[in-house]
Image 1 (tube, rainbow, N blue to C red):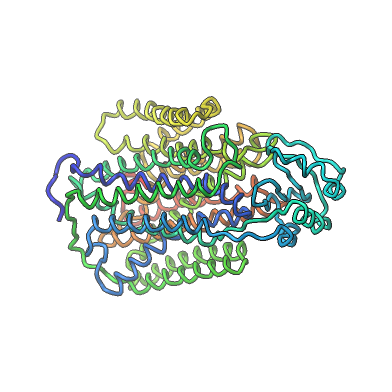
Image 2: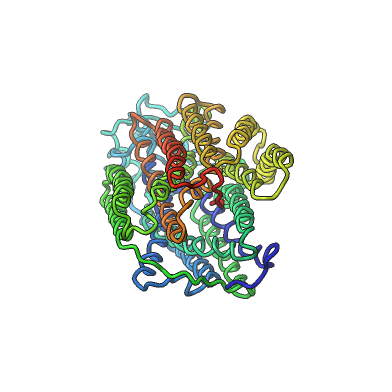
Length: 634
């Protein structure tokens, strides 16, 4: 059992919350790292979203391994080793993943540019291939193929070369100051001759990295996170009076959200340097420094945990096997492996669609089967849990996919700016998106404390703008133009109104914020410029308090199956692995494009609104008070 600290926080609680910070810091930073990888590895939008696939599938695999191993041994493995050791082991796994990233990203193959001719003519929309020195880029823009020569001392050697001029349309290059390049269109039939000139006269080569190895390293980092998260959340509850456990989790969630806000800014600085730099400034050495720093920080925190005296936490609950529920999870695992096969054999988008639909069918079937005969289903006999599992799957998917595809949206010409935003300039917007979640979570945490009604109302107006001020301040430190972020204020006002309308009731709050989310993304689909951009970004505001609402409603009334139900819900973080690549695949279809691929978040918000509506009647039929359910932040 935990040491007795019945009042206040355990002295080492603030050591524990460091891991909450890192989960948010690195997960949010994917929004900046994805555009870098897309350019560096010459990826399609779907391929770039495999970073999220690797990151969030690790949560699913890690939780599943713990569950299946515990079921086989009939003992809770994590309880056996202890929460403190579980966190330390998880941190060390993340250290290994961060260190493995360095040789993985440095492993490259250099080939003559002539060997890429077939890849050039088969480029997808907005995909590009660049030469090793980053001087020459072949880009597919809609139906046109472009040759881009980046500004530099040697640029005129290319733009005045008669052989090249004979192969480009109009026999001339035009300056494109946004991309810092001269550009001209060429016909696919001219690609062999172009690459021949670049090879013979300029000795150009193309460097190919091993993106699969990068995904493996990211998977290892997140696998460590999975173990850390499974141990840290109940550990936080155990560090003090159980009645105030929700307070500690909300505080830890606030630290997590602060990590999501500053993570993109720091990672952008490590990759691209100071404000004013361009995406072309990023290189492999930048990534090496970044992951060396991350590995060092993980190791330092692991040592801190090791030397700090922390309470020993154990549980007397007997692990209960659930044969039918385990069978359903095994089927979901098989579907997941099918999707992995589709990735390996370049049959990605169809299998992502089939896989997501298949997982939803398995869960709906499990719900119906458990209603007919509850024996062997354990926690899955409760419809609120199974529908909540879908809710968590969809929620994590929508939270991640909005920001993971946002880099491509902001870089798209005609959305925020006429020529599109450079990759090095997107970090304030990614930071603001995750900052929106911080605003909502800090506001939601107010209700966890015993305050008078008038004080709560006042703080629900004040706290969102304090959090917003923090976002502006950290962007100011990064030397970003904070004036560009001021149009977000009306979105915050709408969110504050949503909190008052929700009346601190989880089902009602979930429905309201889901409706706001649908409306915001719908407006972003129909507009562009600052209005469309901030409409899309406000999706973070409306996602902010969904996790505790879904989680609380899903586990209400589960009794002795509450712990098992919580484990199943954590597994459904898998949605963050599958939904972003689905949207990325739709964005790669030229008739849909990146902006209209945001129909996926609208569908996700629609299900969450349905869950908020449906779960009320389910809990009411069981004689449970759905209005007083309370949960902790993700």
